Image 1 (cartoon, rainbow, N blue to C red):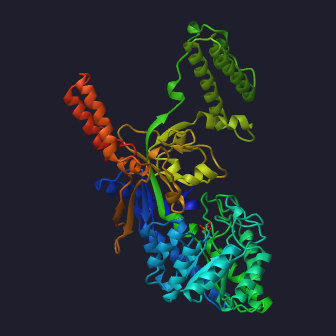
Image 2: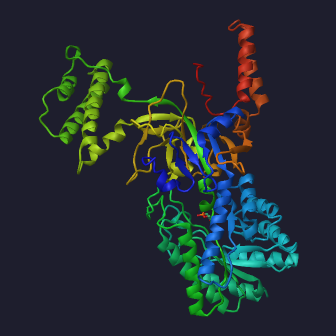
Length: 630
Ligand code: PLP
């Protein structure tokens, strides 16, 4: 449990029970769901890993926690206005996710944010029974604005946030055309620099927002169009996953100054929207390291409320209602990606014993001496000498002076030397040279997992974002293998080789030896934000199976799977790239007919081949891992 950090990143939602199984506590109370039981239940419904497990109650808990945190801070600070959060659809657009969030947010007037036209279409339809805000961000064409203003016309509180000056003009024109009074927001391009992997959302070169002179021009345009009463909101967003609370505080202070200036210029205003950025402590280090946060959700809420109140009181401006667009913090913890390890690639397994009498080449003899002779040098020097000899052997092979057997002997001896050095290293205390520390990585096994990094873990591939990863069961057994994870795409980048560690990031994950005929599942946690939707179809694997888990009302360890979503079948992904199943079948059939006519294949075998092809088109894209019955 400690090894994988459950007590650091998992609390209060994930823990390990006495039998070594990972358990979820979706409502952060005593109710418990064993992940292994969910996998079993899903299998009984025909759904196998790779699979996303969504805990709907956990989503609900996150929405409530955010709203309660702001309510508590507002009460504590005697803040004279209210909190009106919105969920940014872009972070997870799945209907069941939005429905759950809307339902949980119903009592808190929790609204939605759209960042594009398709998202606006979702937001308008899903906003049905909500009295929350609907905020429109992102680049907008006239139709985007026309849609939003029509929604305003039916009496909804929809605010169009201008990201560019050209949008202000469009809002003015379309409002005149539709004869509707819009609600307008302006997005400020703050001077406060963001921090973390998504820091480019603010600063002078940011893609979005109005710099101070553009902000001034926007207010003039609005005034001139007679729409002064429409300017209601100031917005900023300094990037997702902000690791350092100081950055957030500075941004809030700067934005509040903007807000107060606009209010003092005579615009009604009333709402300050502090965007997203509230992070998740993925590695559990509680630090300002990129995959972490040095603050809690509650501290964030207190800081927003406190700082806005401070600035507004000094500037004698009424405090605005507060809006956050927190996405990651709401949805990241609610889903787990389950993948099954089905193979292991190990350097140690393929080592061949090298007998002195079988050695034909000096370079091999030298390596043999290093392994079996008297040790005269320090560890680092032995490593350098062995490394040089291994390179020499590779080069001799390339030039034709060493045969395959000789090269295999040299490689085997080299890895045995490394293995011995690594063992010594693991027992040593104090300072160790970097090259020797790197041996554990070099000697790590590769556990081959049935999933695609490009589909399900894109931020790890693209931005090195760390996610907690752990076996789902056997956590009361000591893991004895250090491994990296390889996915099933035919791309060398399709791997996970950076993991959260006890003190520092690690380049391997301690795992258990695989057992014959017993599936070994890994959970990749906190993947509910951005990952599903940004995934691509590299190698045409596509989306994975999905189960939506709900807690039973009155049972301590009861759950049920309400919805399932089937992962893509091969037919689905192929149609996505313009190959109709009929077209493919016809082409193959023609080839089989030709071979049958030419007596290359028996008609019966031809028919069977065709049946297999058709059946595979209907099958899922990921590997179908079968175990022999015991
Ligand atoms: N609001 C805007 C304008 C965004 O661009 C984003 C995403 O980057 C968000 C909100 C959500 O941010 P987060 O997931 O960090 O809460």
